[in-house]
Length: 262
Length: 262
DNA sequence: CCAGAAATACAACATATGATGAAGTCTCGA
DNA sequence: TCGAGACTTCATCATATGTTGTATTTCTGG
Image (cartoon, rainbow over all chains, first blue to last red; front, side, top):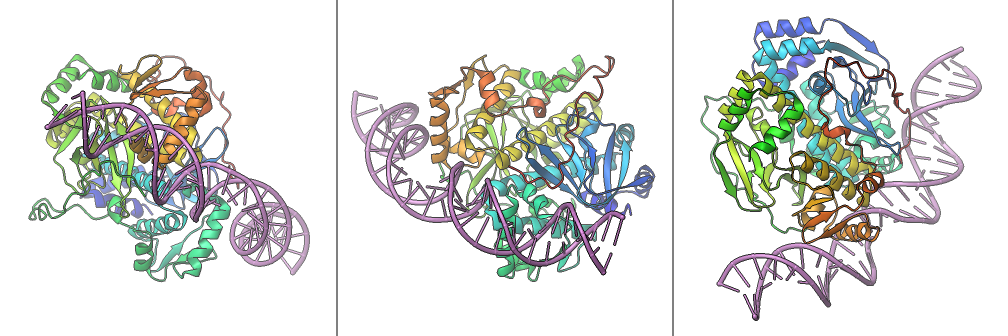
C-alpha cells in the first residue's frame, strides 16, 4: 500500500533500506475517509500531515464570492499538506474527492524525518517542489491554453502521474471525477467542460464513459495539447558520474522583449 | 542592502546574530544586471541560486505556441530559484524586468545553509512555501476573478510585499512594469490590461502615471477585489506561549458538494 | 427493483475578453 | 535637441466561454 509513496519518492533519489523502514513505520496507521469530506480546512491550524494511499484528494480554495477552485490534485503516494509543518495557518482546504485511504502523520514525526533522515528530507523537499511545478503548469495552462487543450493536458498529466504509482494501464485509467470537479480544476464552467468533452470525443481523442478514461492514441493527445512532461520531473536524476549532457545544445529561447503574446 | 532579505526572513522566525552574519557573508558579492535579461533559462541546469537585492525579477515560461507567461514576481529580498538546489532541471526561466542588483549563491552554499543552520533552513523552507501560496492565489485569481479585480488584487499584493521590505509608501509605490508585462502576469491581453486600467482610473481606484502607482484609498481597493492577505503569511507567527486562538470561532466553510460555481 | 437524486447532455442567448490596426505619446540615446 | 522605437490609448469586430434552463441518463439507498 505504501508502495505508491516509495515508488514516487525513489524518483527523487536513492533511499536506503533503513529509510524505507522508517517510512513504513511512520505510515502504519491508515484510515478510510468517505468521498467529499474535508481533511483540513481553510484557516485551520492542523496538527497532522496527510498522505494519500488510495483515492483522490484535492486542495481547494473558496473565494469570497463562493466559487470553489481546486488548485491541486493528490493521487496515491502524494502528501497533501507538507506545509503545515512550517506554515501554521492554512490558506486553503483539503478534501477527498473519492473514498480514500489516508495516513495522518504528526508534525513532530515530519520534523523527525526531516531532521534525522537526510535522504528522506531531500525526497520530501523534492516532492514539494514538484507540486509547485505542477501548479505552475496549471497556472500557465489556465492563462494560455483553451478549454480543450487544457482538459487534454490534465488527462495527459494524470496518465503519467498515475503510471508512476502503477494506477494506469497503457491506454487509460479510472477517472472518478464529476464534471463539476473537473470544471473547478480547470477554471471552466461545468457546461463548458461538458461541451468540450463532447468535442474531444468527437475527435476520437478520448473515450470517456462510466468514469473510465481511455486514450486511443496517447501520442496524438499529447500533440494536441502540446504536452511537455518535463515539469513533472519524473525522469530519475541523471547520474552524476555520467558525461555531462551535451552543452549548449539547446539554444535559449531568450526573453522575448516586447512580445505581444498570442 | 541585504536588509530586505533579513526583514523578510525574520517574519518566518527568529534569527540569531550568528545567522545574520552567515547570511551577510553569503551575499557579499552582488552584481548589476540590466533590464530584460535572463538569469537562468528553461532546460538549464544552473549552478547558482539568485537573490534579488534591488529591482524586479520574474519567473516565466514560454509555451510551445510562443506566449510568455509570468508565473511569479520577485521583489528585493526574494530568492528566485531555490529549487535548483534540489531539482536539477529547470522547467522555466528567470529574467529581470528592470535593472537589478542580484547575488548569486552557489548550490553548495545553499546546501551548507540548510544543513548547518537550522533556523536559516527553516526560513528558506518557509519562503518557498510562501512563494507557492502566492502562486496558488494567482491561479485562483486567474480562474475566478475578472480582469479588473485581478489587476487590483495584484496591486494590493504588491503594496503589502513591498511594504515588508520598505519599498512602498503608505499610498503608493514604483511600478516599473510595462502593460505587456502586466498582461503576461495576469493572463490577459495588453489591450485588455489597458482598457481595464482605464476603468480602474475612472473609478478613482488607482492613479497610475509615470511608472508610479498611487492608491488613494487602499481599503476601497482591497474591498473591490476581495483582497484577503492571509496567503502572504506576512503576520509574524503567533507566539507559542500565548493563549491559543479562540477555538471554533471560524465556522468551516465546509466542502460545497455539487456546487455550481460562479 | 424502485424512486429520487445526482450527473450528464443539449440548446439558445449574453458577454468578457481576444485580435487587429492605427494614432497618439513618451523616453532615451546619439 | 531630435528622432526612432517602445509604450499607451482607442475603436471595431470576432469568438470562446459563461449563463440559464430543461431533458435525459446514471447512480444510489432503501
